[in-house]
Image 1 (cartoon, rainbow, N blue to C red):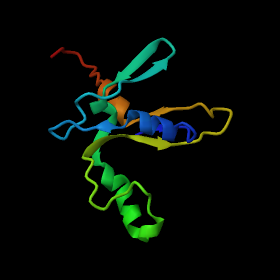
Image 2: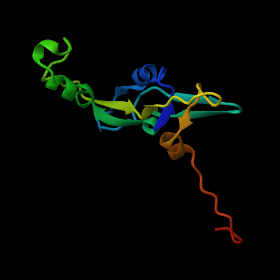
Image 3: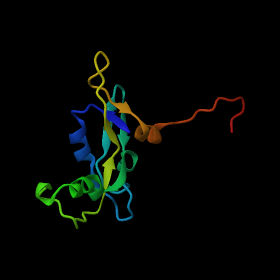
Length: 124
């Protein structure tokens, strides 16, 4: 996950959500996530920061537990909007002096940029 301040989470989550491809992956068209660091820019493609989930899974289960008169007016029991790519984000508020503008670049960044260096006497 990428940890972001809680006040940024809802907007980032909505901006990065996009439909999954026909083959149920997040490798198709979707927003590029650029993280600017001092001296470098990390570019994450949709397949790096998102995973496939159904929109119904995200909101439908909670809606089904409510009486019909309390449900979201746009919710339909037979709603089938298809699969969505959901950003792997979580809220984390870090107190001062380190925070509050702190991002923790977790698994999505490591999967794309992590490199293993093996120190040895003989090259392979």
